[in-house]
Structure formats: C-alpha cells, structure tokens
Amino acid sequence: MESEQKRAIPHVRLRKLRMDAGMLQEDLETLSGIDQGYISQIENGKAAPSLMTCFKLLRAFEKVGVKYTLNDLVEDDGGEY
Image 1 (cartoon, rainbow, N blue to C red):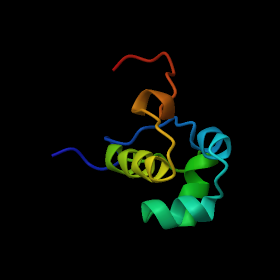
Image 2 (tube, rainbow, N blue to C red; image 1 turned 30 degrees about the vertical axis):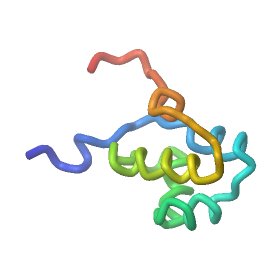
Image 3 (cartoon, rainbow, N blue to C red; image 1 turned 120 degrees about the vertical axis):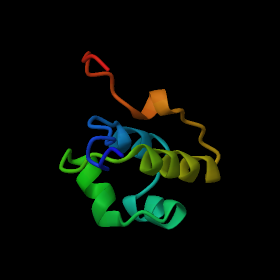
Image 4 (cartoon, rainbow, N blue to C red; image 1 turned 90 degrees about the vertical axis):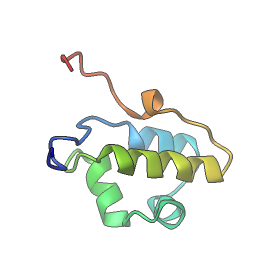
C-alpha cells in the first residue's frame, strides 16, 4: 500500500479559493474538521494534503454554498502523472 506522502497532492490553491469564498482559516477548520494549523501549512506550501483531505476541504466549501471541484483546488504543475 502506498504511504500517505506518496498520495499527497503537492500544489493546491487553497488560500485563493478560501479568500474568494470570504472564509477565514478558522471557518474552514470548523466546517472541514481539519486543524487550522494544518490548513495554514497547506496554504504556505509546507504541507501537501492527501486526496481525502482535499475532498474534506471541498465539502466544507459546499456547506457555505460554494461549489469547487478538485480541478479548481489542484494546480497543474505540468508534470507527468
């Protein structure tokens, strides 16, 4: 089985999407159940979220009426998959 690190998604646009939705990191923490400190690390490029974490974040946005897709969240770095 692959480790969590290998399944991590390295480049996400979380800060931009969160700010466009008018949310604070604390709001996202409350709605997603993801620690605000970890959200900050993701936004600052110090942590790479797993696919499951990305889906939790997307569901949190849906709770406030904002529909983003995984394509909206994940940056295409031009690399091969």
